Length: 483
Image 1 (cartoon, rainbow, N blue to C red):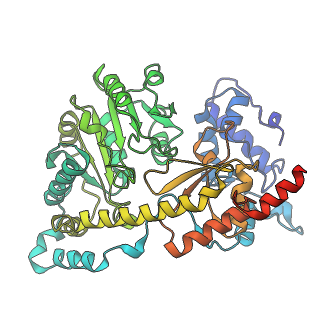
Image 2: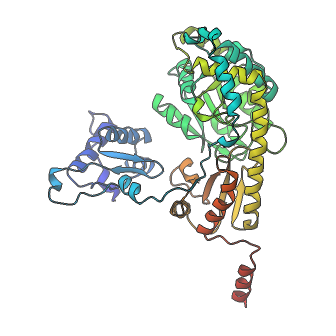
């Protein structure tokens, strides 16, 4: 598609995004942009038109809402509208999403980065806690509870943070919520419209997508091998920094103590600066003890800590929490007293009992052993391919990052895997568009059954055309070619 087709009039009047929306809509309705045709990426079009990315994104979202285009994850925006009268007597083109549905092979193994292994979940213990939470003496649980969550659960969370993460906070500082989406939205209400967010780039997609829908004050801050760069952060107008210091997503690095002190120093330099610490999978560290939380180093009340039960328990529980520093706690109690808690009180009571009786800690310890065993199996299966695959971030969490060095593009690696009935996730979906990089695959191992893991990886390596470095047949072939 020629980019020149997207020039538009800049005369004063309507907002830029509306003029762009009208121009693209007109070309779709006229048939100039055909059904199934892919639109330029947001960054490419923004650069070509010399406008902000938000202008293009807003135009694309309006077109999506009105049904002129559709967004296909990891692929982009495609025209999905066709003039039905104009296609009378003709075979209607099949939009790419529909074609993908009919042609996509059945997925045999999904290497998703956030899945747990449900085979080891203590179903009997959890049923017991739910049953006890629902007995006749618990009639109070049928009423709306405290807006921050039930005190009994918040007390258990505070004790867990003290023992496991080095964080000292009172139960009163804990806010329970139905996932990061709810908690980050509440936090944005606290920080107000003046908040400007500096996010790790590349980084976790959920907060970026959420904040971009709440405000236009979102800035990418580059990372290096030690995490988010405070020197770059200082040069921006951001007053809130979102970080994953214990296991940076997607590269898996750990922020060292010196970098953490730099970040805390940045936050302490001005009133109204805060650090949002997402500690999404810190329980699962396989080399040494878990790294203490950034909030454990905070003496100035500048860190908001986020944790989740989705990784250690079950994602469908939809329970997470944040620990607020005293300054924000007072603001929360004053501004958000109308906000009812979003997690079932019955689930809260069951979870509190699960933690009180030691089942929570036992489950974490058990799953840490299970996932360590899976990780060691992944390492051993990939070890013979050391010249063709480089592993990163393989000391914690639910996934490893594979940098594949056999000359095949990342897009083709994902496509070959899909054709073989395997779903993998390309690193490029978390990186700035157009960036030059080594092909990378985020390979989640935690959610696959142990009996599936080995054959799934063997099939993956085979479809990528990788050869075992210790394979005698390969060695003979190389020797023959050398002669």
